[in-house]
Amino acid sequence: MNTFGNIFTLTTFGESHGEAIGGVVDGMPAGIPIDVDFIQSELNRRRPGQSCITTSRQEGDVVELLSGVFEGCSTGCPIGFIVRNTNQHSQDYDNMRQLYRPSHADFTYATKYGNRDHRGGGRSSARITISRVVAGALAKLALRQLNISVQAYTSQVGNILLDKDYRKYDLSMTETNIVRCPDPVKADEMIQLISEVRAAGDTIGGVITCVVKGCPAGLGEPEFGKLNAALGSAMLSINAVKGFEYGEGFDGVTARGSEQNDVFVNNYGQVGTLTNHSGGIQGGISNGQDIYFRVAFKPVATLLREQDTIDIYGNATKLTAKGRHDPCVLPRAVPVVEAMAAMTILDYFLLNKSTKL
Image 1 (spheres, rainbow, N blue to C red):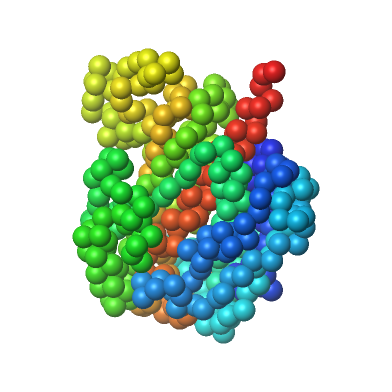
Image 2: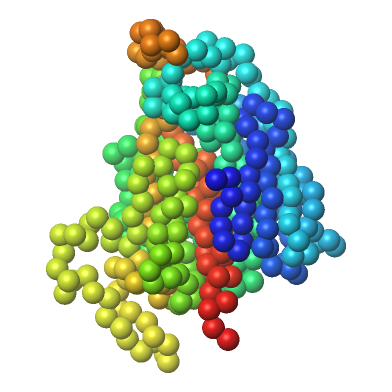
């Protein structure tokens, strides 16, 4: 289960404190201009040490493309890549070798495999999302040719939240602050809250909203393989994600059908809708409207304060985590959400090409 996708696929490898994180992308259409600077800029959005509200681990996260690119374009062959780890502090985890960290994958991994890498969580570390961001950047380059864009932003941290209507915000403002929120006033409040939580040795969660524009109608399957299910599966595979909803989501359950139905209209010769409560997907298939969804992230499990736990022998003990950790995962998770959405949309676009002549 280290491979994502159907036609556009990503197979990942590596551990948080190993030599490198990497992957192999297969199914990338041939002839796509490969902008290495763009791929690196996407990694820079995810990398640690980028601001005062993220982990202080310093990694350049420089991508090395090993195959599948010739004279600046994709060849249609597998694209192999690696990002080397250069700043591991494995000794920071020595006191966790025989302990189960609360809400981490230590116990479940040990139960499943009979062993675990205590250094940063090994494969369960969020550092593994590097591979997703590289593959997502490649998918974005392909989607550019189709005029499809993917934009995510932080819409909630703790109890500080934006209105759920993304159309009220200038999403080009997302990258103007370190929390990646398009509302500058709310962004300052979020940054202040994260700073306070960090000073207390604690962590906090929130919500990322994502909007896909330009997606054509017809992507997705009517039974198994619904586009909304694929997006949900992609998002729920991201570390620390606890929930996914698209369109009106849970808020729509209090409304009447007469309020929720998206009425069809003739929009300059094209089928359109007056509203978009469905979130751009109906019957599991895209309808040509904006696709929008929200992803809930839990507070980071590693706290820089003492916690009760047990060791591998079942003895009660105390854990005080060391090392460099994020007080809130959201600012660095924004590009990860975009990456998973881009890969899903491209994969389903390629699948759809095989459904009719």
